[in-house]
Length: 324
Ligand code: SAM
Ligand code: SF4
Image (cartoon, rainbow, N blue to C red; front, top):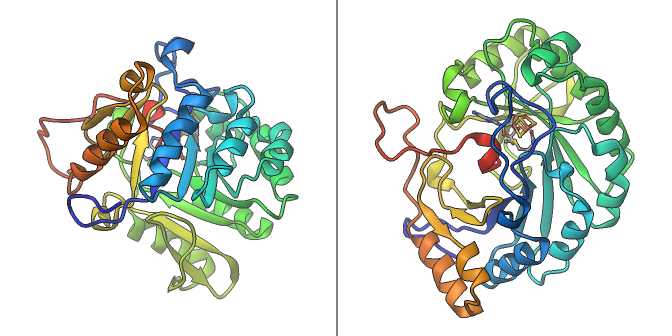
């Protein structure tokens, strides 16, 4: 499917819940958010129905996200059903890793292709401060267990910001020793992220270079998204950057998002998109749903405006509701 700006859109991020077992300070308020009832959340059958229609439009890649996707019961059944949809080639998951150790076996058996684990620091006290929960050991155990499943590619995601003691070097070194790629995601001014400064790619590169020597841009392609990578002589894994703010990549955007309540969002920043759940539940035909989805994608905005002030049509959602 080609959108109104000529971009190939073949990747959907599907949020399966707005609930989470952590409370990352840049993503969710300490007290959590008002939970939506189970009836308002798309069922697995409804999600698979939407994926089938998307596959007819040429979608090939699906990322399962949240909130925390592993708090949704029997997630592996959804992964298995999405993998079985004709045309879907790649099903991946982004998780905070807390529940990963116990679930990875089932997820791998269901055909999951890759897992991104979000981990911002290896310092237990700083982890507690950022996530407002004492779960670092469980996350590390989840990472260790996942490494046993060779069919599941594993990456670490970290949002660097001005948090004392976050220690990016320590995280990079840990990834290196475990043979995992690590990716630094610039803080986006969405939801609570607006309250924190964004540590830019250039600053992180300089910081890491003081420890591991010159970082050279890596020319190969890894993953489905806008991440670009560097390699270093002393380092087997790759160090990635998703720099939505300092290196805007909207011209190559390949994705749309489906919220847990069934809203198809065509840009991370803006509230543009379509309610898919209502027509889905009131008996719309596949052709009608396909037209609605196609029209939504055709209207995908040209790009975000993170660096502009006074944006009038801003997103009202916080990141845990959008899915990252
Ligand atoms: N709970 C899962 C997790 O943490 O991976 C999935 C949902 S979470 C919203 C997806 C990703 O969004 C995480 O890597 C998180 O760090 C990132 N994120 C949340 N708020 C952000 C912000 N304001 N800017 C950049 N990334 C953000
Ligand atoms: Fe939960 Fe992920 Fe948001 Fe942290 S970033 S609060 S783990 S949804």
